[in-house]
Amino acid sequence: MPRFTFYGQDDDIAFVETTDDFNCLTETYDAYNGAQFHIVSTAGQLRICIGDDDDTGCWNIALGPVNGANPVPAWPITLGAANGELSATLTVEAPADARLIEVTA
Image 1 (cartoon, helix red, strand yellow):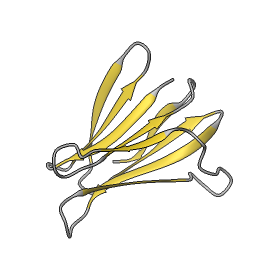
Image 2 (tube, one colour; image 1 turned 30 degrees about the vertical axis):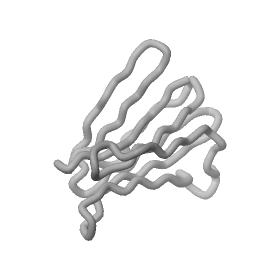
Image 3 (tube, one colour; image 1 turned 60 degrees about the vertical axis):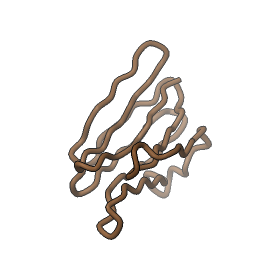
Image 4 (cartoon, one colour; image 1 turned 135 degrees about the horizontal axis):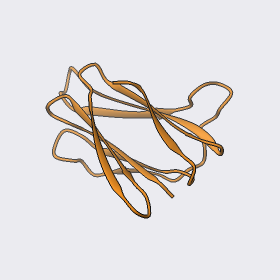
C-alpha cells in the first residue's frame, strides 16, 4: 500500500514523501502560490491542496473530492504533528494502484 505524506517548509517548498513496500521517495515542489495534487486509484480519487497562509506564515493542508462525481474515498488519513514549527503533516494510505498527479505547483 503506498503512503503519501504532505508538508511544507518555510522556504515556499512543499514536500511529498511517497512510501511503499520497497522505497521512500521525497519530491519537492515550488509552492510559492500553493500546490495541488490528486491521488488517483481505481478505488477512488482524492484532492490535496497545500499552501502557506499570508497572515500566519504557516502552511495549511486541505483535502477534498476531485469533483462532484467522485466523493472523498474512505482511505486511512492521518494528520500528524508539526514538521518544524510551520507545518503539520497529512498522510494518506492509498490502494496499491494509486498514483500521485501534480495538478499545480
